[in-house]
Image: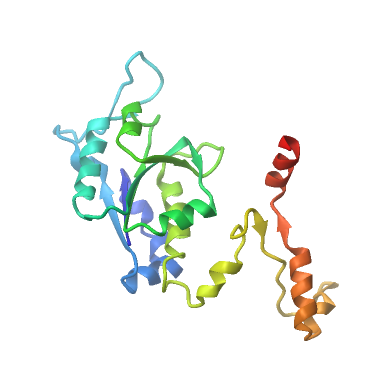
Length: 227
């Protein structure tokens, strides 16, 4: 899989993608991550990527023509029908584990990181979808791009040592959260490991795990209010 990230700050991604699962995926050739500097597609001598908004307003807006040229440069590199272009935008659909699984089936995922006061509205017409990672304000789309890349890459076949681990994770089933986990020491500051986990009785342990698996509270309360 190829993930192309269009950004004004490629160096921001050096640390997060140089460790752990994302690094292993790249070393194994399972995932290729292209960091594309949007500024390289500016045409004036100042390498301008933004401009004042029509009608006035605070801040600068990223230009549609510059972003479009950057997009086209990446679309031409991976010829596949299984490709998607995503704008990281606070107005987009909320990113979920289901969406991560959907993206992991692609051959090419292109992520566009907005910045400043956002992007020209016409950018929404040249991308396939807009995604948000939550209802809060960030400086730009770089951190959301890191989040999405991490969650998608770990789902690619051959990345995790135990493929079965993906089936037992939080959010794999609706909005269920994984059961509590314990390790040594057995007793710490008066806090103990549940006896059932030390019993060796696998049936009882499985029952306990099912019983202690929870639904994310905000989702559960939302369903109660709406239903």
